[in-house]
Image (cartoon, rainbow, N blue to C red; front, top):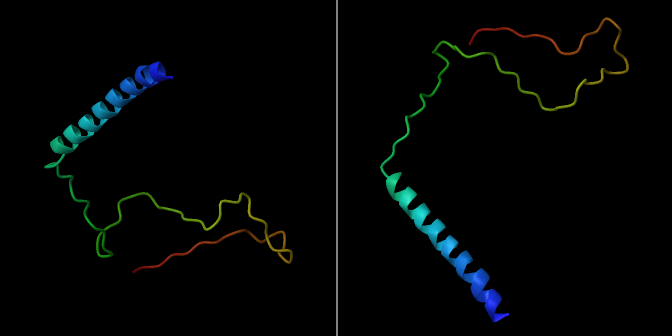
Length: 82
């Protein structure tokens, strides 16, 4: 049992110490690194990105109500100005 502790424990200990040293060195080099600030969007600016659709459910397809006619469609549309 003592031979296994030395044969397995020493390499594991050395690898852990090397990982800790690598983490400390990487944090030291990244200490002064500044990331660019993302500009905040306000409503007075033009929206240039594609439209986004957020849904409260991931169920596909959603079932229509029982009283719905065959001509009824699911969902709708909206438009407006801010």
